Each structure stands twice: as structure tokens, then as C-alpha cells.
Length: 403
Image 1 (cartoon, rainbow, N blue to C red):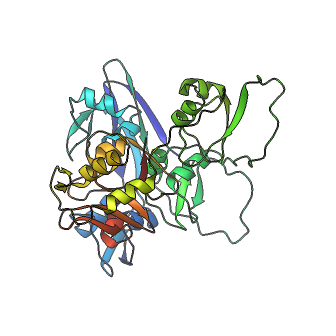
Image 2: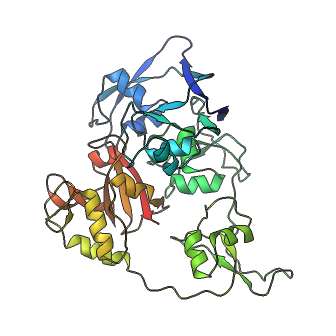
């Protein structure tokens, strides 16, 4: 279970790890498809501990490599000291730090005089404004996973701080909605450094499991105003999109449905007022893929966003605008901050990678389906690659879709 520490602007948390007893290490042979994040989750440790124990300077590993894995659990204690800053560590991004301290990316940029989303390891950042409080979420160290139960799965609602076993088709976003958690809370609770999970993996979850109501058409309540009706959420929907379709504001839509956040899920029923308007036809994802494939072979040019040459983010900018989606020119991290997680990626969605040539979100491409994506490769220019190749599996971050 998480421990939450609240202090004024002059206080943040200093975390110290105490190790009880002697430390032990197991040997592990790297299998095909493994990544440090996957191995760390399996052995209830962290990527940094594996790298330190094995003298690794990067996250790159190879098949049949022998790694030493620490099996001694660390007990975490929390002590409060006077401090007003946060020091950036490997794998951080502004969006991750903002989520951890319950602030926005814009506020972090304003307080630290940043003109972009680029940060570096060791950078000291202010995480609150004068006169405000800071909320820091400190994860408990992971406990050894209990042996799998031999009895039939229970149909009862799970209790807070329980284990969930990942099934085929699961994503962190889907599991988070099911247990009333955010993706960041799931990653913090399970010491995950990316959004990648695998079938059979055990994740710690908090809160009670919610079971979506079957999509059965029911008559509206007698007290409901005649103009109100129901809308069933579809894949790709957002509150903004639904509100625009029914000539409502997001605030009105949230108030009508007693929503406390912008999170919705496929199959959810929402009350709407007014009549639906036919949306203006928008470019299909097929259009963007067609345009992208016509650019295969175009050379890589750092900062390029024309047919003379592209870098990864310039390629996204060009394809989106050519297919009718008007967006600004940002870095890969900038597009990461302007997109939302998707349960199941579709052709035309964006796929993000981290810690390639720099720390944090550093590469982006367009998903084509069947584990393939098209992107601007530094050596070969615009080309098609496989998400599940050894290199891209190790650096995978998330599938997302532009707002």
C-alpha cells in the first residue's frame, strides 16, 4: 500500500532504504524478448539494482546473457527533511514528475523557466509554487509474490492492495480503469519504468474491482428531463469529443454524470443532453498510413520536417498535417504530452520509445498493425520496423493517440 506524505513548500521527502540481513543473488539467463524492466518485475527488484549489480551502463541486454539478480527484499522507510526540489533520475520525463507531485507539465516549466519538455539526469527542479503544498507518493517495496492458487478463480470483488494477474489483451490503462487507478499509480506501486506488461505478470492493485454494466438498453428514469438521453462510449472517444458532438461543454457532461475526472472507458453509459450533430468528416488513419508509406526511403535529417529529410518527430508532424490533422511541430516528448493512452493500438496510432539516444521519451513512430511501425531511422531514413525486435522491446514506452 502507498504511503502519502504532505508537507508545505519547504518540505519534500527524503527516502532512505534499509537492508535487513545478508544480501543474496541468483543467476538468470536472458531469454528472447526479455528486457531489464520485465526481469525486474519478475524478481521484484528494480532496473537500477540489476544494472548496478551487473555493472551495466545502459538498458541493452542480449539473449543468453547471465545476470546476477538480488533476492534480498529492501525495506523502505521515509524521513522528512527540509527540501524544496526534486533531482531528475534515469527514465524521468516531465509528465512522470508532474503526475508524481500532482502538478501539471506547464507548472513545472513555469517554475523552472523551461522552454521545452527536455530534462536531463541530475537536473534539480522545483516541484511546487510558493504558498502551496506538495503531495509525494512513496511506493512500498515489493513483497515476494505468493504461489499461484490451485483453486478456481473467485468471482468476488477484490479487496484493496491485492494481486492482479495480467491476461491477454490487458494494458495498464485498461487495468487502471478496472480498479479506479491511474496508469502512473500502477507503475509507481509496481516499480515499472515503462508501460510494457506481459501475460502472467502479477501486478499489485488498490481499490475495489468494478464490473462494467452490460450494454443493455433500458428506458430512461421517469424523473429524467425529456431532452436527456444515453450515449455508450466507443473506442477513441474522449469527453471533449462527445461534448462537441452533443453541443455540450466538458464541465456540463461531467456534472450530468457525476464524474470527478476525465477518465472514461469503452462501453460506459453517459447521460447527454441535446441532439447529436453529424461531425465533419475527418481524415482516416488509413490516409496517414498511405502518406507515410509513400515516404519510405526519404533520408534522415536532424530537425527535418520536409520531403528533403525527416527526423522522427518531423515525420509525425508532416504526415499528420498532410492527412488533415493540424498539429504543431514538437519533439517526440512533446507529442507524448499531447496524446492519451489507448487500450488496443490501431493502425495510425503513435508508438513511443524511451532512453534511446537520450534519457526519457526520445523516439516516436506510426503504428501499422501486426507489431510493425513506420518511422525515421537515423541510418536508413523512413523505414518499417518491428515493435517486438530486441532493441525496440527494450526501449518501448507506450501506444498513444493524439488528442
